[in-house]
Length: 259
Image 1 (cartoon, rainbow, N blue to C red):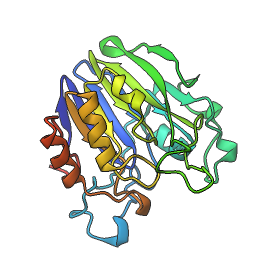
Image 2 (cartoon, rainbow, N blue to C red; image 1 turned 60 degrees about the horizontal axis):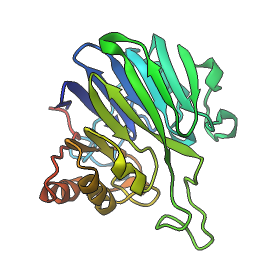
Image 3 (cartoon, rainbow, N blue to C red; image 1 turned 45 degrees about the vertical axis):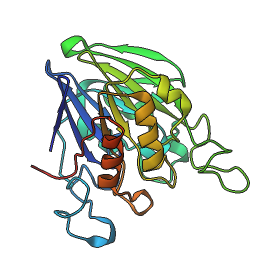
Image 4 (spheres, helix red, strand yellow; image 1 turned 60 degrees about the vertical axis):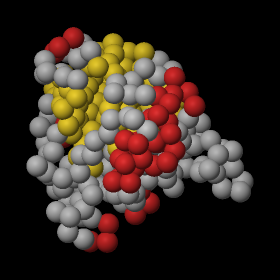
């Protein structure tokens, strides 16, 4: 299904892939691709029935309609996914440290991507031209705290500081925040956010309880969880998360099945 919020149409395709479209026709994608969510090849964890999974059904999606594509870090870099969504004149924003040569998957170099590729630092702002006034993009530090709950006994984490970023977008007059693969950092609560795309799976990202607490502190107009139940390490009870957030007085919605 598609979530309607404050002039935006927002669709979660699975994994981290999220499509955002304004009423004026500006289209942005966050972290498109991987695990078959855009090729129609994804199957539920354990091989269950995709109609019953708390996750969008995979579709063979190749609209090439994006004006903007944002990539947070290596784990979410998928050159095929980007090509499936990027329009001919798209702006492709890729965090500086994303390095296809070090990725153990079949991906193309960043410089071979379509459109205009922009490398962005950890705390930068970029204005992107396009329909409906285009977009403003802010990168924000996003990581697992080496002294936090995702660290092992030696302080090793899957997403150390400097490995990835989150993105705050202003599109069609509405602010959207996607933290990427990160803990629920205190700094996120200070952001002015209308739509919060929340991690809820724990393991390598914030848990449902941590994101619910962050949502209460952030006080967005709407919370939409994404990036869960696609693969084994990202299993989550989205219904329980939604109830927790709602009890805190914050509007929340799920986007898991076709209408």
